[in-house]
Length: 365
Ligand SMILES: Cc1cc2nc3c(=O)[nH]c(=O)nc-3n(C[C@H](O)[C@H](O)[C@H](O)COP(=O)(O)OP(=O)(O)OC[C@H]3O[C@@H](n4cnc5c(N)ncnc54)[C@H](O)[C@@H]3O)c2cc1C
Image 1 (tube, protein in one colour):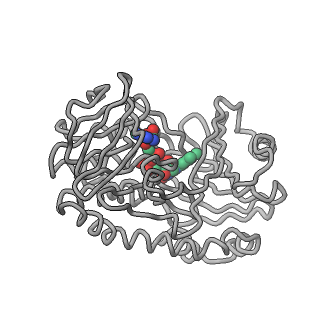
Image 2: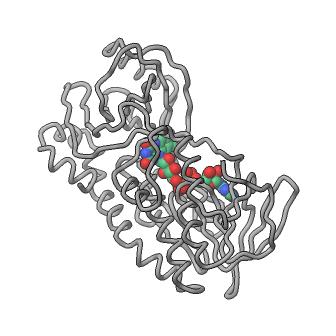
């Protein structure tokens, strides 16, 4: 594990990055070329992020430029294809999207390790408040030793879906939905897919279920949109239905609930303000159709760090906004398909549409 301090060593940095997730790590990596950089993380490190741990092709392509993803963080089956599964009609539609199956905690720990030694990492260390003027950004941090005030030329908000930095700019956080994941022991092999299952009759706000084998367990995740009543009971009902059809699904070894970004409008996607750049989920960058977010985090984090390294003062935000325009266009394209994909008719028709077209609509492949 890389050395982590409990408090910053200086009162001024060229760049401060809030949040040591994939967006923050890539932003810090590149911003360091401009001068002293501090990466602060609110939680103890190594952190644990509740996640499916499936890496999109875009994530792997981006990270290949830094270091190879080590074999020992990859679980069996190593890669799986994304498949739509209409449960009641027993229709399965494989797409061209191939996902790498990793242990998310080990992946996050490995990613911290790619940071150059020159970058200072402080944790647990939480951004409390932020102000900015024409010359600088001032942040108040809470560390284990109390509150401290620092200044920087640029601040990167990479502090996730409940971003404090974003709220401090007066931009409301995006709505959230609940995901519950059951990790169940595998008593025998299941099909090697990331199965995105649509079951009718569960409830109006129930969106979909995914199931993927991860080593000796299967991850069964269910997405409940805002307004869902009794998601825990729905989760029991869904897991029961899956077990009835797949006796290989053994006992639940862990159940965990988390919230995720419910991005539903282009207005939710905001690159920043003044000297403050928002990346990853803090900026609303995430796939509105699948909830996949690591590829958006690494790409926007990288572009934010590069914009800071290559441009001075407020020009960095202009450069970053321009550099992320195709990512925002991609999210916009997904917004346009969302009403179709989420409607019962769209889910029905997905069973008839050729694989090539389903892959294009859902993943832009
Ligand atoms: C159940 C679930 C399953 C998922 N599965 C997948 C998947 O299989 N594949 C995929 O690509 N995506 C998946 N995602 C989405 C993915 O996890 C996120 O989109 C991705 O981690 C976002 O990265 P990030 O760097 O923007 O933010 P995060 O990874 O959320 O990191 C933000 C960090 O900021 C820290 N922080 C928060 N507030 C402060 C503060 N005030 N000061 C300092 N630090 C702060 C947090 O502690 C956190 O460590 C899933 C999400 C959920 C909820």
